[in-house]
Image (cartoon, rainbow, N blue to C red; front, side, top):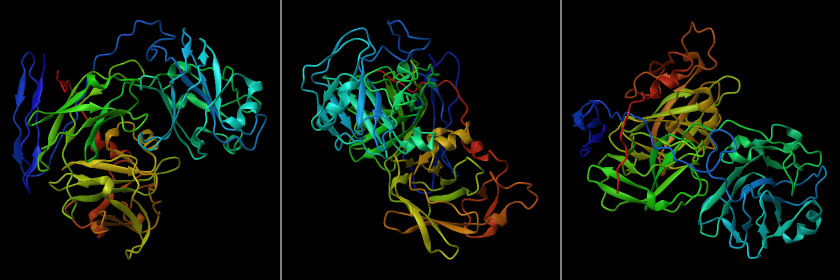
Length: 514
């Protein structure tokens, strides 16, 4: 077996780590980590986890998993103005399997964070036969919706936000069976987005896919209590890739994947080991519903000056039926940022039509910092703040020598740069709009102390470029001031962001057994 063991060392102020791993066929390998001067390099390498073998007949090639006993198949979160349906919110549950499902004891959950979500348990002895649909609604909506099919009343029925939320079905054993994040972004028609049209799950066997949720095409605005208006066969997403590790709170760490894992994972099948030291972190129940990854209890006694590498016990499977791709991931306890660390390294202020703006950060220092505690502000050229971002989708550890790309649209960024390492994309819903004229960007810590500043100006582009849209300005030297023209130059090519992050794929053992 080919094995990679990474030996960690204490991080020393002013000295950064470089790790090298040489693969030798037929032998187990231990590679030393040496101390060198310029920067840390953690080379991500991928290896597939074993695919799960399912004994059930697939509905079509590469069906994701055994048929779920219950699915969320339709939802109407903005019923007004009506185009034919009663003006009441509802969701629809569907039994796609061959057996009758007893609904008593199932939980309906609205919200993403486990400790803040609203939940209602089914107390009625209702049975849902194979292939059957049932409309789930509040007491006040029941009579109006009964003409459309069977109705299950939940009291109270948590309101569905028009701005979007997460909906989750929990079985009587407490397992997350199906989770859906909905938003108005699923509507491509402005009239339908205005209200009165439901969202339907168009591919029941591809229920983890966001793209399977589309607006109803039924002239009444929805199909409560019956088959959806469209039945599609969509391509399953690729195998999820381990993106990075992070610190969720003072007691919990996480491992993030590029896509959803199969529902109902048994937590006792998973653990991570941190090296050096052999610290083992046991898996804990998810603290967020629909989270594309795993949570672990943070071991006590970790040093905040040590960079650890992670090994995973267990073989998670994606909703596409294939084992997740694993790679080396670094982890370290974050410390307070300072002006010797993270810098604004590249700015895409004019990405061209249909592409998102983004700002690249680089950690030139020797400390790991938490990006979630940093503020990115856009200011005028004199430094007066115009707008700022301090809201992040998920904590993001910036290890020494690493990059992060802040953007309002992670999916748009990855579509624009398909070869970019998705583990470096950091979504911020409140990302300030970047001006196409001269501006200043300021990076603050959580106490609003300045960490770094950068001026940019479209006139600083290479003068002989025929087109500057889609070309970023990049910092020539991260050690130099970001406030002078000489520090900035046009990126080497339109897709330059990919050259920073593209990771060579090599076999790697990132697993261990417990």
